[in-house]
Length: 97
Image (tube, rainbow, N blue to C red; front, side):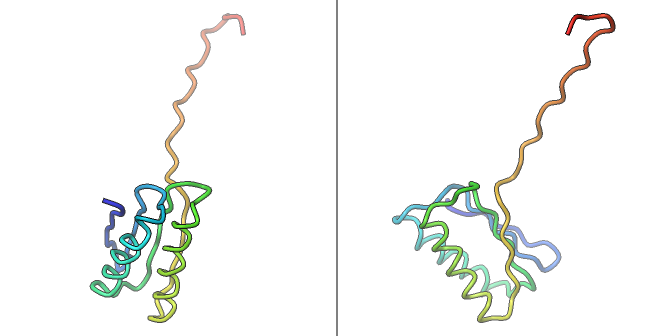
């Protein structure tokens, strides 16, 4: 599986599960295009898996942008989900720093 998706309030949320390479780019692009055509969302949001996506991931994103632009659907892109950092436990009173 290359992508996951959810539809919420007319927004199609597409998540690339991993950075794409040349062998997976076309499949991810076709899946995304099929979802856009099937659901005709009012907005598409693509979440990339890394802060520095591969050229193949950027190519798939470009194809999605062109499709959305052609259909008049706004597209936004976000970076990877942030994981919450555990909070540091407070030091005991009088403990040495």
